[in-house]
Length: 241
Image (cartoon, rainbow, N blue to C red; front, top):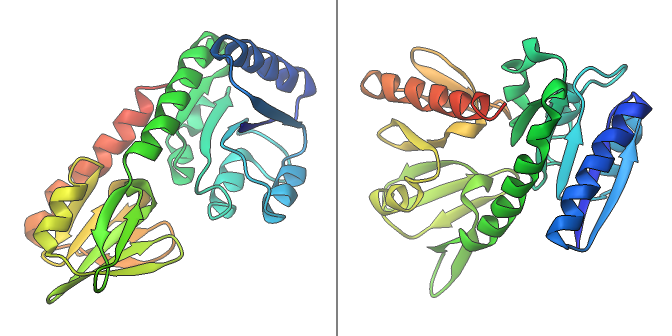
């Protein structure tokens, strides 16, 4: 069963989005549960309580707790949730990158919702397929999804894979780890760091900052490719709007 949530402070809009969502879900003939929220704080309370949603469709312009703050402040609770922003605030599309949404749909272009939901199904299927096996200790293996990895740090003969809330010591070469992750939006920022572009918050001349506040060094020779990778991430998201 898949769990969906719609959050929009305008009840008419929330019901409309939910109705369109149900129509597409019925076509897919999937078992699902859908919750509608017209108060973003009520949704946040559910998240803190440990309630998980596979997909969240949220407005941006909401009182008290707007959609962008919802996506950033509760990033840990939403780390396995595909976030789709549905909003009239086209001026905030680039600011919305902070929350790393899966899609951004203008309310005046709701005809794009079915295609976005189909993309959601494909993404959920791919999530299960693309777990990567990393050697971890003697005769042990850890399976990790690339989108959960923030960055990899090379430390002599071992590599440290940093995820949202856990670090794994991998007994493999840095080059091998980079090869395994090269198709998933990672970029080398330094001879010892390989970073997931989707977690980059800002880029400076000598360092970059991740969403969780971690500072990663950026070598002069890698600066341009780090910039390019971040721009590609932004363009890919923008082109889906």
